Structure formats: structure tokens, C-alpha cells
Image (tube, rainbow, N blue to C red; front, side, top):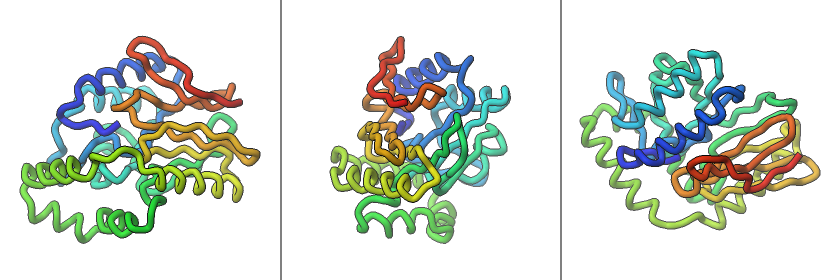
Length: 236
């Protein structure tokens, strides 16, 4: 989704889409990079997305489980989402049952080219995270994160990363027991079906308003057009 302080229209569109499903949805998974940058301090969280956070809290309070799998832009959570919003935060791959399927869900940032993996380990290691939070004031820390994000995110989807995630999904499905792999990260929405199962990449909400849904009829790659849901691809 890549929310920032400048993405109010994207936030409103997502809330409208989620409210469209509110009476029927059984659970919600956020597949990483919900924010362009998210650094939670001991007593502070970043500004913005108040209405979206309120919706997550309302759903959680009403008994709808919400799971947030962190990505490469938003790994620096502490406990705000869990204690204040009732949202489960998962930092690695998650495997669980839903709608008679075994799901394997993760963001996918640890799967691409080998050159990116040391950066991922550095960003998630407790020591550099603690140093960043401790040595930089909150405003400076967030401003630096925004600057880095603008510099490194100018390119489009990386074909190597897209292929790496597709290969990884196929390997997970062939190894079992998952029969549905869900990831994000590439900003390229995909629905691939093989004999061993299905790979769904939800794409990028802020670019195309795409998302995935699972029900008893199958797996659906969908797009919100501002008023209604459109089907991009689906499989039983």
C-alpha cells in the first residue's frame, strides 16, 4: 500500500474497499509495506492514516482477525499495533489454514537478488534498529527514512525479483503442505496456477488498487475501481 503522509486519496479508497467487504470478511491479511516508512519509537508513532488505523481497530474489536506481515519499508514496529489496535504483527513467513486451504504468506523482500539480502538483515537486526531509534530524534529519523525511500524507489518492478518470487512460490507449493502462496513486494499483481497450488501476488494498492480474496469458490485477484470490485483473474 505504501501509505505516507501524502496519500490521503489512496487511504480513502482502501477504506471504501474494505467497508464494501465488512459484513462478509472473515479475516484480513496485510502483506507488508503498508507504509512507505514506519519507525515506531517507545512513545511515538508516525503521523498519518488515522482513519485506516481506526478501521483496523474497529474490525479487531468486532472479532475480525487482522494480521500484519511486515515488509522492507515497515519492519520497525514495537507493540502499538498489537496492544492498541489488536492487530497481530508477523515478522517472517506465516503458514496457517483458511477457507479449507493451507496458506503460506510473507512479504517477499528476503527472496530477491542476493545483493538485497544483507540490507534486509541489517534493517531488521536489533542493534542497528536500536541505534537508529536512540541516536536520531524522531523528526530526523523519519525525514531520513523518507529521503532514502524517495532515492531508492524510482525504478519500476525488477524482473529478476518477480521471477525469484515466482520460483520461490513454486518451490514452496511443490514441497507442501501449503497449496496457496501469497506475497507482495514486486508491485506486480499475479495469479499463477500449477498442479501443486496457486501463487497470488497482490500487487501495489497505491498504483493499481489491486488486492486478493479467498473464499469457498477459489482465489481471486481483484481491483477496486473506486465504486465496485473488478475481477482481474481467478481460479477455483
